[in-house]
Image (cartoon, rainbow, N blue to C red; front, side):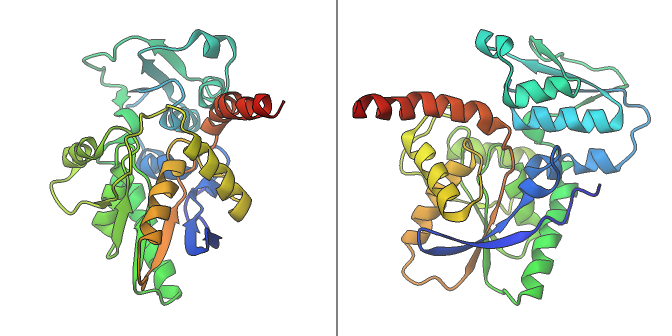
Length: 292
């Protein structure tokens, strides 16, 4: 498995034309932007490494992808979290469930301050310089596609958590990269950029209101369902829904559009399992009760 060369599809959403880079189709278990970020660790040999250590939330996409990586490489995997909800422990679902099935050892504690020589530490969300290896390959795929299709004026969009993927795409692409902040505000995202690079940042599209990461918003659920209805493509509820809200607003505000837009699908669809349950319980049940 190479985990590269995902297909690009043309779609129409709200009467606007887009292209979608289907990184969700790279592989059943190792896909999306995390597969790109961790590609360096997959393709290179680390004979001294026996264990990977990382941290984040108990439903993180990166957590699941790292569990798959460690299974492939034959490494142990310790993942640190602040808290695991009792309900999730008793009813494993989504990334948490499948990461454990791939052998993840999840620990409710602070991340150790130091590591052994045979331990590889990877920052939360894969915000590491090594991520540039796989993202440069992604950028080259986009450049080849644009050249083959004679697209000279292109803008590339993807929502950002740590911003690692959008940052390195802008580094390796001749086109403008657009993004929006999904974890924290725009200032937080800019600080994340500065941790890895000092200049040449993507363009951050402004949001109409502040969103708290992981909180349920009816408009995020609605655009997720509308995307599925109009495009027959399922997108991630945490990042892609907010991304499409920002991109939809951006394209609607354009008077004359003389460029094409390529949307990078983030993958992360396992996380939708638990998110859909939460959204359905909060909004679908309310609607059912209203109609009764």
